[in-house]
Picture 1 (cartoon, helix red, strand yellow):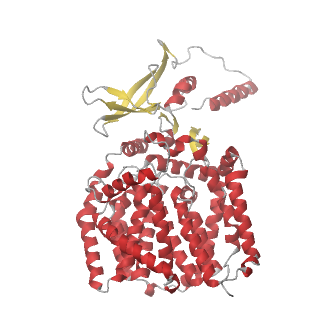
Picture 2 (tube, one colour):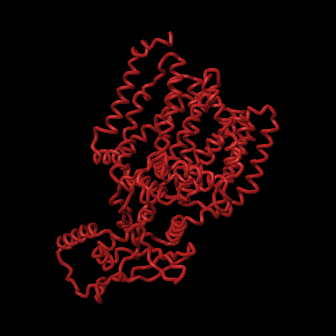
Picture 3 (spheres, helix red, strand yellow):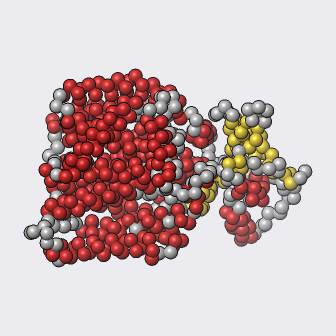
Amino acid sequence: MDRSSFAPWFDDRRLWLLGLTSIAAVALGFWLVPDQAAIVFVSKAGYWFVLVAFAIFLWALWQTLGDQVRAWSWRAIDWVSVGIVALGGVVLLVHETFGFKIVMDEIMLLGTSMSMHLDKTVLVPVRGNDIQGTFAILDGMMDKRPLFFPFLVSLLHDLSGYRPANAFVLNGALTFALLGLVCLLGRLLAGRLAGWLGVVLFAGLPLLAHNATGGGFELLNLVMILATLLLGARFVEKRDSASLTAFCFSALLLAQVRYESVIFLLPVALLVLWVWWREARAVLSWPVIFAPLLMIHYPMQHRIFDLRASAWELASKPGFTTPFSTGYVVDNLTHAVNFLFAKASEQPNSLVLSGLGCLAIPFFTLLVIKRLRALAAEPPIVVATTLFALGFAAQFALLMAYFYGQFDDVVIRRLSLPTQLGMVIAVMAVLPQFANAAVGRALLGLATLGLVARSVPSMAAHAYSQEYLPGKETAWRRQFIAEQPRRDYLVIDNDSILWIAHQVSSTPVFQAKKNRDALVFHMRNRTFSAIYVFQRFNIDPDTGKMTLRNDGGLSDDLGPDFVLETVREERLQTLTLTRISRLKEIRKGTEVLTAPDPVTHEVPKSRAEIEKVRAAYLENFVKMLP
């Protein structure tokens, strides 16, 4: 067919159907469904949309890779590469304690996985209680974070029972998967040595270790970027419907890991269109035709940013009024350079990766420009890498224009991981430009030296994480939970989701003050074995005076009517005191409201009356749950 003629394209009914499903998905996702109805729809149906997409992805992987898997032989394994990947993964996992590192993200993701596991809904539990030995979620809210990571954690809950540590199990497995994919990509780009170099560079990045031992979605994001890139190369090579389906559904799931990962749909679309143009036909499959409809929940969930102004977290940075602006770029670039080349005690960086990456980027950029001019002559892996370089560049540009895009910020530096993955790919991609193999060996030796001499001590000390107080407080709380023989207690804490996600009854401070009568009821009826209160005190360095936390109007102060007894306290940072107390009693002036009822109530003699009183009590009991 003459490529200058597009007539055959207009005769392809499947292409028309893909256009219709895309239009329908955009209309439903962005316009036709009202905001509140859209949020309810995602809550009820989001789990099932991700499940269907994931099932199709696994089926498509088997369709395109099944023959290779069946022909697989132990003798064909490169055991040296396997050993390097395994050793790199161990280095990343053994030097830091497993725990929730970026608390707000990771606890919200864990809470969503809990609701997905228990009742297949998408909610973060905000009210949950132990009711006669069974923990039940009583209320929840829709979170802004995409669904693929909590979905995978919920599958682990389904297989092994609900355990908060399943998030760590998943990230531990993803660590080895990530290094394996890096090794494979490097091998395809420039041979075994390049693959080993990529693994050692990434294994020497303390920031990766920090996230590999956490409960966040950063590792999954990197794995899905690499998997999508490699499946894109396979589609360029095979150009059949099975490889297209695997590629497209990998991209669809990638877009549901992190908010900004949707930007990688750009190189995915470019690669598909390029193959179609080269083939002079639209390679399509029925799952891909209907794939847009499996994404309608994504823009619906994104409406949270319109419904809740706080979702952008602009209040965390006073003076900022818009999330994105080119005016942020220069300042954010300064912070990025500071992160890449700071001292090991200040930032979890790798000087070797930063130096080699920054040197490789200009050469890689020239390579991309050169290859874009003659893409048809390049191998499939080079085609995919070249187009995905545009995605890495766009993702970095987006973050630099983000008001909270400072890579050296303790909370934000994890957002630099895709950029550092791009730097690793750049190093591996330019390696073949050096004819002398000694260059590759010298770089591998340099990366190994940096890993042993700088990165391992940095990971072992992890001084860069000590400034993040919420992470330390979370670990302290989790230690308290682990020490309790039973979980039949209630905790009053403004970070109540943490306790609920660990199946401990909890309520925030403002709710406890608002529902004082309910707490009085439960203390008099001994519903809980104990009621604890978590509080943080800020210490004035000049006077030593302690004041209760009051961040953004969120106060830890219960008021004088709540009488507390200290259970344990610790200075997790120099000018703070973290305390857990037991609620002894609740007063109203001088009257002790939680004292036992002095009246002796007569027990009904009739069984029917007893059951009636019991039913009324249970109904009131549930209503009074905090």
